[in-house]
Amino acid sequence: GENVEQHPSTLSVQEGDSAVIKCTYSDSASNYFPWYKQELGKGPQLIIDIRSNVGEKKDQRIAVTLNKTAKHFSLHITETQPEDSAVYFCAASLFSGGYNKLIFGAGTRLAVHP
Amino acid sequence: DVKVTQSSRYLVKRTGEKVFLECVQDMDHENMFWYRQDPGLGLRLIYFSYDVKMKEKGDIPEGYSVSREKKERFSLILESASTNQTSMYLCASSSFGGANSEAFFGQGTRLTVV
Image (cartoon, rainbow over the protein chains, first blue to last red):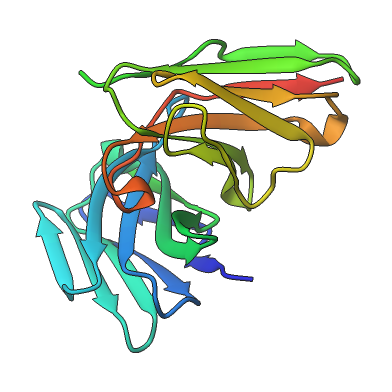
């Protein structure tokens, strides 16, 4: 079936370093790719998203890139801070059964060490 | 502040019990979703609803049902709880665009079935 693969499952960086999380998707018709951040004890929260008509999007220290040909997209966090420590989920839209649904990756646990 | 509220943070139920998980949103959103979150599997869609009294099966509907009698409320029902339904359950809502727009998540209900 349709799926989204996310790597790495865990990522440990020093404060100030960059972090990159990569996802691949299988449905070439997917056109919406959000990234969610889940802090401990909370529900996921959207941090950035990109649509298929755009190759890159940036919001302060975070950016997302999309390669439709290769069917992969990545989250880039620069100048990481301890408060960036969380679980990050990528997702891709899938049109199935007459409706759009989101397929989520398995998540990446990011730890930023002071 | 937008809000999705799940009725319980933690629940412990016995095998065979009928379990109700309640979710209320205050954003007048048309779309509501129930996901299940398990380590290494990300978020998997159980059921969703794009309108009052409307429901559609997600990717893992077996053993679950839902009810949406009012726009702001979406209930997940475990007809006969089993130990393999021990998990974190997340409710979400979104406005126009269904799954192709920002989803707002509740804080989650951690259900343990013993």
